[in-house]
Image (cartoon, rainbow, N blue to C red; front, side, top):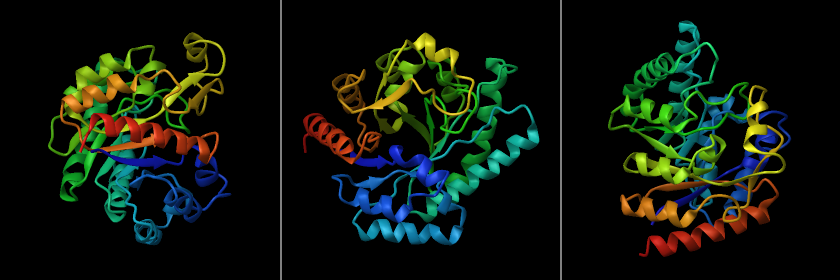
Amino acid sequence: MPKLAAFPKAFMHALCKDGSMKLSEWINLASQLDIDGLEWYAGFLEMDDERNWKMFRAMTEDYGKTIPMMCCSPDFTHPDKKFREQEIEKEKRWIDMTFALGGSYCRVLSGQRRSELSIEEGVQLAAECIEACLPYAAERNITLILENHYKDDFWMYPEFAQKADVFCKLADAIHHPNFGINYDPSNTYLAGEDPIDLLKKISTRVVTMHASDRYLKEGTIEDLRKEENSEGYAKRLAHGEIGKGLNDYDAIFSELKYVGFNNWISIEDGVEGMEQLERSISFLRKKMKYYWVE
């Protein structure tokens, strides 16, 4: 049966911007949940100090949990070569961070969707940067996971490879034993596309998954498009309780089970509090038990 992790979506500003929450507090809260691990974020303020890395691993493992996945956002589509080289070095540091925390999966992205980039140029730049990181990851037994992403919390522009055709072109350009896909069904809706259609194109390469549900608090997807080129997520966009949004988890889990997926699923939820996160966990546990009967 797949294992379940959680990501502190509700506490990102507190953990990454103003420091009003400490990682020890999040670890303690998460330890009380029916999960197996904690997905980490490279931008946590306390992760700037490398001396903290092993400490947080030990703290998590003392609660009987692990840190399997690292969420980070390299920007590989910048036109400046020196900038891209710096992003490669950042990704290597995040790979080291993942290794120190005992994790096995470290995210990569394409980068931001800058208007001056053609699809061919963007795919080439992103593929070259990811491939430059792969030997480093392989030496540490880390798998780089490319996510069909919408937008990092702190980016100005949406993901270059947001649309399925661009995402598949990028994924098809990279073949390596230490490369796979992190599938996020909610992000596909934000691209105006069907998450099941995308999943069927990539399911054999999916090694991890983000579980979430999305809804628009007001307006339409078209309204959302008009707000994309501003820092962070649009205010009309919301993470909802899993099982109550747009995603069809029966179709998703049926396809993943069919292709033999049996790995980490990380929850991006709980923005309305820990009780909401607990309900999402309960929903996923029930679905996982149905599709992956032990």
